[in-house]
Image (cartoon, rainbow, N blue to C red; front, side, top):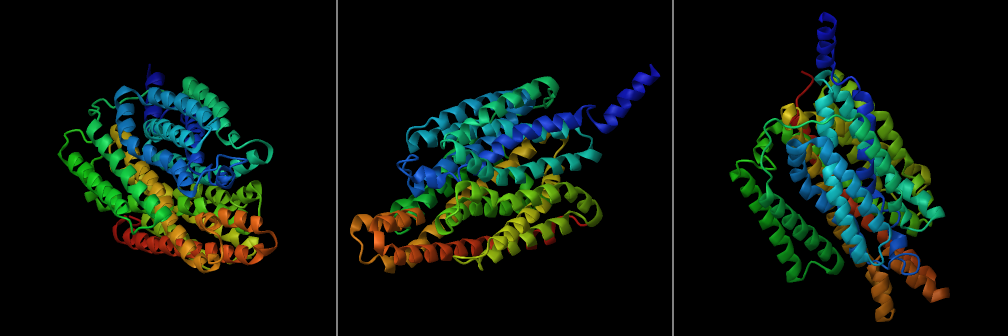
Length: 510
């Protein structure tokens, strides 16, 4: 009896006996949802081609990504609560199965509208998967090992952001564009089998009620705001409907905050943001994902259209980012114990800002090794920010409410990613069109519109011009590089704000 009691005491002190195997299964499940944040970036040029893809416009390409991220972000609250109430393992399994079905639907879409709808369904499924993974980690790991597990979890998030372009580039080399989604199906089957075999069920002993009103307000508000930003970047911000959409989105989001403050069982406990530690950590996560997802949406256009690389080559050039994630994310927990969360997060945001500032020096023919260094530094910065910030956020709540805590930080991450694509997209589009306009003066209206649409459109028009293509290609390439500089400047400025907030509010070494 004493031996049995001793074993139970050891398990209680160290966590679940199969916790590291469980973490491996959760990482596979998590990787699916993260990779699909960026898997379309390298495929965007193919999807814009009416012959090889779907003939999608720039706005449709942005929505094919943001339909995923907006729904993902808006429903994380609700699925965090559902997991606490009905079982995190059960919700994880439902999410994985639905993710596989939505992936197959995306692969066989016949037009951009169908792809956007299928991507929205994938976002709903991902919202069920992601918070459950972090909640289960918080339940099966003891506090002493939880920071290491969260570091692995965060490293997977960062590596997944970089793996998306690599996987899609490799698949495009051998198969049609739909294969980037169809590859999810066997991975889903592997994840489901692993969850059924090793992941234990867990619940919140006192779960809250499902906040339907808050969920609807957040979806409506985010959708309206992102629509206004994307539409403004596509057609100009001088039209009243753009400002009406943005204004309606902000009003709905303000109503969402008011609703949550009055609710007895809010899906987002806005009072958490009164805690400076929570707010500063959340801001750090928001900034690194705003810049990362924004950069990963537009840099493939630079690599493929301006530099002429294939989708696979463009994806491989992101490998330094993934390598930095794998190197620095596991070491971040050790660094936090030695130097404190404040120093590590500030260093990570500083590296992120430095990498973004370096983009200001990119030219049409910048050597590839310079790009590799920029990707590596940005990956290192992101790896140093996410684990300590995630640990700070999760530690503000009791383990029984881990679903709520993970939902909050992951919602902020997805919202910042969607806003990064939308806001930086508007910046890039406006700067590109303004700089290119003088070079389009002699073109007929249809060709003028096509070249003004995107860098890919300008190259297509140049190909149609034949012998007179050189000046237009040179002008389009220069204009797009200038537009990248503007987006990098915005992101770098935000990184500076993040460093100041972290130094002011995150806890130090003690």
